[in-house]
Image 1 (cartoon, helix red, strand yellow):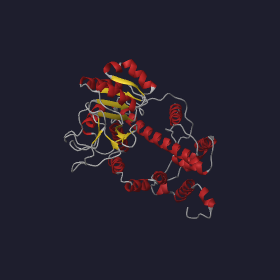
Image 2 (cartoon, one colour):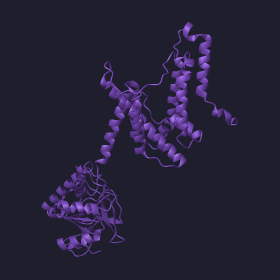
Image 3 (spheres, helix red, strand yellow):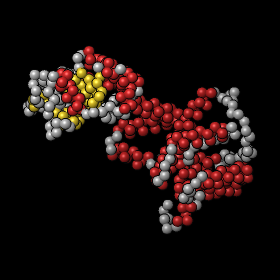
Length: 422
């Protein structure tokens, strides 16, 4: 790499050169016979015959399963990552599903011949990319060379020191870690402390305990993090824009405490918006003055599909929005919102809902109905509308025949005798 002017040096197979030189030195100096150096020795190079794989009687099945899971996880992760990296670098598409099918079929067939577990190789991918290989022919040529080596070259490696093979493996592993310093520095730079802690913790566990323990912990912790992030439904509280009465935008700030507000009031005995321009009380956080709460109406936009994992927290999040107007307010504080008389769900961002989530949503609507709170759904897609009809959402108290929020509020005005005219 240092001699950039001599490009021919880049094409020299350094690993092969090291093996040849080490073998010659070991043979000439008789390192194995006279100095007790462990050498490669004799290896049966005959091709294996077809046989059904069996678990040896002296081997514990648990060890085989544990090793198989570890090998599979490492191989699949490396194969998919390498495939995506070079697909992005060379501008072609890659299918992870097809990669997994190919790996599975090749290993199932290979197991009948006692083959080594086969996965995508980072080093070979780098070599193919450097050689500008564009088809599977490079793999066929490599397989032929391996076959020739098995049949004719193994006897010549008798004197190869095993320490040289170990050094080659260590060098290959170190090359796999070439991007690690950059990854760690990037995590420091963006202050991703949780990711950095997870990386260092898994690395320490792999070194102190075992690779299997480190991988198992990595999978378990990753699944816990995914479940934690996915079980919270993405919902936003909407307010009416003071510039355009027909526009509704998310309210990002914390709602003012009771007694001092900047909201648009919907009282049953007032036919117009009652805009209160009081400043927030001391200690309350300011929020967007261009978007105001609709008094007595909770307008919620759902930004993702609801399913069994994230719908479980929907009721708790709605209850907190109803009481405080913001998810960041601690439940120990006093309620900041006035009693809710109607709830409007904007489902523009919810393309689907499964059966478990639908049952949870039905129970929420029924509870609102028992409290005399009207519920309306707007911008419902056809698939969700069909499930609403089959589940009896209308009978539970939910109305979903509205094309926009304004239409739903106008309907609620007539039903609740509240003013919604901007």
